[in-house]
Length: 495
Image (tube, rainbow, N blue to C red):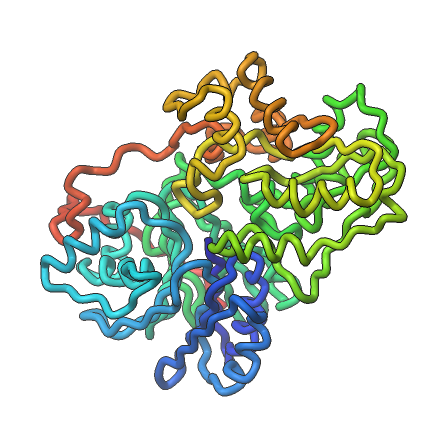
């Protein structure tokens, strides 16, 4: 999971790039990087796992000078990658996950193509994407052939002398949005990066669409696939920032609607107060409070200045430490009260159990009713590291305990009306040590988002993969042969 940002300006873009990239800090925890192109490329990458992006890059950006640049906050790979290709030098940042990266890397190595960057003892995914693109006839053709070759998803920004190529993955799992102000264009994963930098949204890039942004405006290099757009639903439920909008739908409003639907199914709960697990659970809790008429209060507060999200770090030890230290209980609010706790999701359940619920019981809570804003997570994300291995998931641990072994077919446990589903939820509730546990249904979550079901990726909950089969020939990207494409009329919008 990464957040990417790019800007092309009439003047030096470094300051806008610095602040715009920083607004993606909630999406990654390991590396930050920025690249600016002026007379030449200036690139800087830092480890941000133990410090904020702003503190690491504050002096760097002031030394950078150029009118176009790209930035990234990444969970796994060091980015941006610089490559001096047959198309000339370029820098690239990516967002997504490539399931067949080892296979693709092996085929490129066999053809004599080398890799210089190593990420956690594996090929750096962003460098792999750069090398795949460089196999095309030009950059646009290379991006399209890369899309053909990969399993998973990849949205990217590529910076060269011509400008910034912005390409959204073909099935729209991750968003890219273009904004404009008087002196600049920008492209972002999160629209929350726009308001304070003076940009207004002008375009949501379509799945598969390739846009070139330069001093003359924006140029469509390849049209999108308008009939396919299965954006990740988890963006609205958890990973996205509250002020962001995807496909024109705001995150905060969706979370409030999730809370409304949770409360509508809770007529039998007589709680004293409603809360949300900071920070992403707040809006879910507010929606629940508005629908139920119960007061919204804060029994737990997050020490925001020192701790980020406990979900995104790759290390379980780091995740647990952050979860323990960041939430501080207010016993004066907790003691003697029956509390509804709205949470964005239950992934593993260990942090919720050990570092949230325990603090409520220790503070003297009378009852604890947990309400996740999405259904039980059943499958690890295939497209953007939203969830990890299948054995970590709380629902799968419950199924294993109830069945005595792992199941390949969990259809009955996905059905919220089945007896097996109810047994699974009861097992998780007992494991969490809560008074009651009720999950959001898939249908209510989809209604809260306000987008047709077929236009959402729900794989984490349903196991239904929206991605059609990849062409057999696409695995060997240098051998992929495309039919001659009709000439595309480029759409230009001036700055």
